Structure formats: structure tokens, C-alpha cells
Length: 388
Image (tube, rainbow, N blue to C red; front, side, top):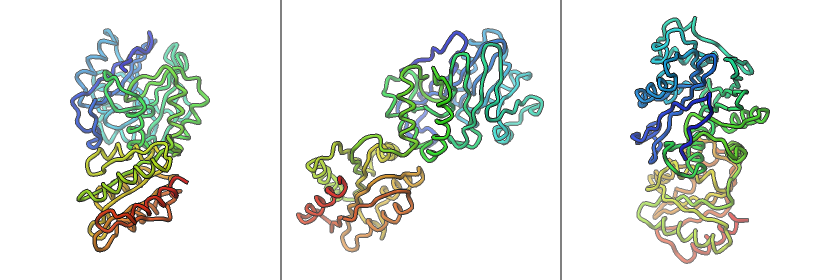
């Protein structure tokens, strides 16, 4: 899906990182990550964001090749997170006359990360709706606070109708990887931006007023075709609507008996007419993939063992991840297991009670150690209630 051709004037100077194991020290990225940076060449040369320190050498090489002996006149900083901002200091030292564009909050954070000579004389402070012209190209700045840091803004270039979207519309995966955009963009969105749906909705409303032909994010491919598809996905995700009609079964099993119950529940749901049923073992599968699936499907079934008078740790972690990402607007069924004092159901309900617009099925199935025929009958009742 590599596509770095933008236009005669706008050059991609970013870098693929295929050596990273965990993005932000927590997200598995089997196909790496891209750190996107752009150069606009006009009467002035404008760099749109820098890259992570892991990619400094290659980025400087790409920049100098694109400049072809010219200098950088402006650096626009849309986002101060280190995977995009680590080379602000390097660039400022390389081009001491370069102006640096950001908002008030941008420069507050910049001073925390860098000691830039003469910053007060070099900074250009912009606010909502401000524009800067560089010849044919003009950038309009749109504030996007908490998408997903307070200082974030995006920039619309009116001559070529390009939206420089910061972390918006980004995805995991290096640009030289051929893979479906939606899956890794969804995992990226819900785990990194997902908590801030209201703020994303506010930004989308602003974007509706713009004639956008190209989206240039800070991670992932440049988007030029079918932009309505990508914008629609962001509208669904940020409004916490289910993307697909189906049931996601997440189970946490210690000795395998709860796993057996979860797999049996999958069969029952399918027999009862569920359009799609997806099942995941929280102890073994990527937790962040599971978070993604919880948001993707319209219903959630939780099956967990009791543990230390609470719930088995992988399920607790999963639910706390969902709570942290602002999980809401779903119907949920619960199966618990325990040998002497089943406690998983109560603990799961306590965590779920802190989430918004969550409907918990009245029927909670309690298994005592191993699945019995009477449990299967109860699971059929639960399935009917969940699918109603």
C-alpha cells in the first residue's frame, strides 16, 4: 500500500521503521510503523513535522535530497509527541533562520523537550482559522485539542486541497507493507485515539467545510481515493457506534473449563442466528486486537474464571482497557466460573458499571467448575436475551 507520490510541490520525506517491536512501548507492530513528514516547496520551503529519533539519519537524508541544496524556511509542528517531534531541535540547529509554527500549547511543550536558540524570535504562533501563505500554497490551521494531545492541530493546504491530519487517519504498519487499511487503522484508532471520540467528532465537523482531495497523516499511507470511506469509518468509530452486527466473545480461562464454555456459547449463538461470532482468548491473543474487536461488534460476551475473590487477571485488564478507552453503547452478556465462591460476574459488573450506556443481560450464567447440561440451557436463555 506504499504511496508517497503527492504532487510536484509536496514531497514525502518520512521514514519506515521495520525494526521497532512495540509502538509506544505497548502496541505490537508486526509490520512496523511509518513516521510521516512532508516538504512543501514554493517561494518558501516548509517542513510539516519531523520524525522519531529512531529515524533521524534517514529522515535528514530524505530532507536534503528533497531540498536539493535549498534551505528550510518554516517548520510547522502539528503534534509534539516524540514520534513526530524528536527532530525539532536538530532541524532548528541545522537552519538557524528557520521559523517554527505552532500554537500556544505547542510552544509550552516544545520548551519542555528542547532548548532552542532564539525561540522567542523564531516562533510563529497561530490559532484557529489563521492562515499562512508561502506563494501558491496557503495553510489554514484548525485546532484539534485532545486528538489526542492538547496541542494538536491540523492544517489545510488550499491550493492542492490537502489535509495534513496529524495522527488522524493514521494506521500501524510501514508504507512498504501491502495490507488492508481498515484493520490496522481501527486498531490504531481505538487504542490510541479512542478515548477522545467527542473531540474527533468536533474535528470531523470542521473538516466537512473543506474541499479535501488528499489526506496526509503522520502514520500510514497518504489517502487520495475514496476519501468518503475513510471519513465514514472515523465517524462510526468516534461516535462509538458498532461497525458490524455481531458478537465478540472474550474469555479468560485458567484451566480450560471457561474456555470450553465460551466455545460452546459461540455454537449456541450461531444456532440462534447471530450474523457473526468472533472469539478470543484474552490470555494468549493480543490485548489491543481484543479491544479493537470489542469496539467493532455490536454485542459483547464475557466469560471468565473467578480469581482471588475477583476475576481472572486477563479479563480484569481487558475491561480496564475498555473503560480507559471510553467503551460505551453496547449490550453485554456474562458467564462466570468458580469452584467454591464464584466472584467473576460481580467483579465484571462492577467495572462495567463505570462505563456509559452499557446494558448487561439480566441472565448471568454461573458455572461451578465444569460445564453441565443445565448450564447449556441457561446459556441458550442468555443467547436469546443478548440477540434480542
